[in-house]
Amino acid sequence: MFAFLRGAARGQPMSLPLFPLHTVLYPGGVLPLKIFEQRYVEMAKACLKDGQPFGVCLIRQGEEVAQDGVGPPEFASIGTLATIASWDMPQLGILHVTSTGSERFEVRSHAVRADGLLVAEVAPIPAEPAVALPAAYAQLARLLELLANRVGPRHFPAASAYTDASWVGYRLAELLPLPLPIKQSMLEINDSEVRLEALRTFLAQQGVWRDA
Image (tube, rainbow, N blue to C red; front, side, top):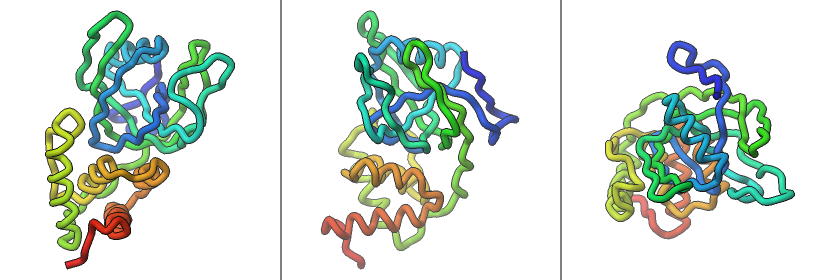
């Protein structure tokens, strides 16, 4: 159905279906979805059958659900690959899936199929270098632990990495009440310490953060 390139071909352009949403998925994140539009139900079935991901991109303008006479939404060019980790169909035509985020990608071009599904040619974005969480941001890790306990396991990765700068930054960007354009900018940043500093600045502006 889709010409994915993985493994040895990692880093090369690939074709994959897109699922534009009013949310930002980060590498390592968890995304529960209730899928009922036929185009996305078929997409999910194909991804499950082939063990392949789909792409999640933030909608900048437009709606998630197709409307008669309205074209596809405008979406951000930087997104994240999502792989279905579990699924259930509680009733005919409605699919519940839990997906996990992996690599980021940049959309180079896209087309709309006859059924309304967006298919894009994308280029993978290399992962950030693994960096230990600097001591200056230890408070952010402690805040993240508190937030993780509140949201519960369904919306938070089972495996934790509170000493990894990228992981802490991505998880905080998910959970904090940031405007969607800011959440998108956190995805597009390629430096974990720059992301952490931006999050610390936001918390200071909200009166949550105080330097020791």
